[in-house]
Length: 340
Image (cartoon, rainbow, N blue to C red):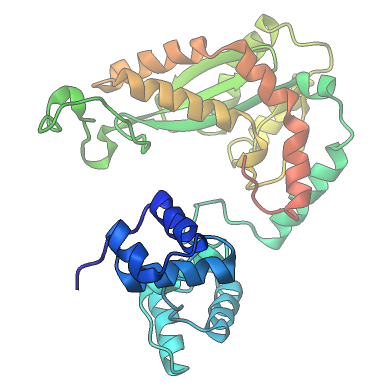
C-alpha cells in the first residue's frame, strides 16, 4: 500500500476548529475532503495530547537488548583490538543474531567508533619511567630555559613518499589528467637523509647526509653545522644541545667531542620523538616539499633546503613556547605516547 501524504498543519488545525464549533466528523470529512478515520484520529490526538503536531516517533525497535549492549561494551573495553567478526560470534553464542552494521551503530551511540591504530614507538617499562622522570624534572623549567635549547635530529625524506591526501578541483571524467593526479613510484622513488637544528628564534642549518652516518661523521656534522648555527642564532651563554639516544649520538667519539667543546647536553629519554619539537618541523617541511612535487633526488635536496629556510620564525617560537604542554601530556598519559 502506498504511503498517504501527511496533512498540513493548517488542515489539522481547521479540523480541530470545525469540531469545536459542533461540526460532526462526517461534515468535516465532506467539507475538507479528508477521510473520516483521519478526522477522528486528529480529533482524538488533540484531546489526549493537546496538540495536532506530530510527536517524536520511537522508530523501529532495537535489534539488540540492553544486555547485548553491555556485553559488547565489556568485550571492547577489555580488548580494543576486537574485530567485528568476534563481536558477531560472541553475540550469536549468547543467542542474539545481528549484523556488523548494528554493532557499529550500537558502539557509535556509546561514543565509540572503529579507527586505524596509530603507529608509535615501542615503549618498554624502562622507557615509560624515563619519560616520566624527564617530564617531572623539567616541569618547573621556564619558557626562557627552553628558548636556550638547540634542538636537532635526522629525518629521511622520500621523493614521492608523503602519505597525506590532496584535494583538487576538476571536472567530471578528468580524474586522470596529470594536473589532477599525484605521481607515485615503487619504493618511494629514492630518498635523502637530512640533519637539521632549530631554536626558538628560527631554523638553523639543514644539510643532506650523502653517506652512511657514523659517530665520526656525526661529530664532524656538529662541528661544521651546529656551532655555526649557534653563532648565527646568537644563542645565549650556557645554551643546551638536544639530540636523542641514537647509537651514533652516544658513541664514545661523539661524547668525547662534546666534552672537549664543553657543550651542555640535555639528558634525553629514549623512544621519545613526541618530546622533540623538531618532529613538527619535519612534518611541516615534508608537506611543503610535497606541494613542490620534485621529480628527482637533486631537485628534492634543493627544495628541502629552500623550504626549510622559509619556515616562519613564529612557527619555531610557538613550538618552544608551548613545550611545557608536552611535559604535562606525558605525565597525564602516565609516561606513554602523547598527541604531539
